[in-house]
Image (cartoon, rainbow, N blue to C red; front, side, top):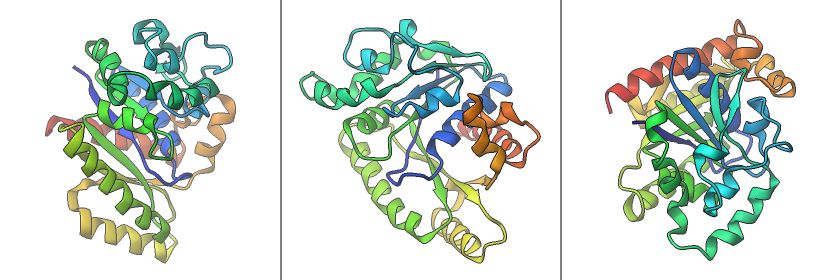
Length: 256
């Protein structure tokens, strides 16, 4: 059965989508069966996987409101060798539509339960806010991967996210836990980055992944080509870091 992980952080611009897309491709490169669920109405993870969000007939929106099954809605990232449950701006309307539906926080969980046997990993790219969409992602997940920039504003946002995860764990999803914090956009030349990194390790211990994702222009260029960074330029430092992270993820879930 699949292990389901939400990639979440309530702060925007911290590399959630870059992490989700590249982790999906890196896990696929390690011979894992992967489904990426795009829960952000901007559809960046969809486009970054090489799936045209304007051309897909069925998206995660139809799945959430009960008009489609995941098995019928998923598309294939040919370049990344993983499946995608796509999103586009139509998903923005789900906030309103879900309010009227029964079991609204667990619509995604129930939908994914029908395809769990098809995958080793299901990765959910959550939007940068505590919305009904993010809540669906957290309720469906076994754990949360938190991408973190090593700066002080990111530390402030982290405490809010940890509290949110604790509340969802207590009230809606007893399986939910923090799998780990991933340091992204890391600049080893920056004293501040190193200081914040040290604070994270001191406070969270082995919850901090050993893999560190450096700032890397090739990762930033990849989405414009509709490719995950690990496919666009496998030799780039950022790509190699995500491949290392994927191997660490595979080892970490063996211990869960």
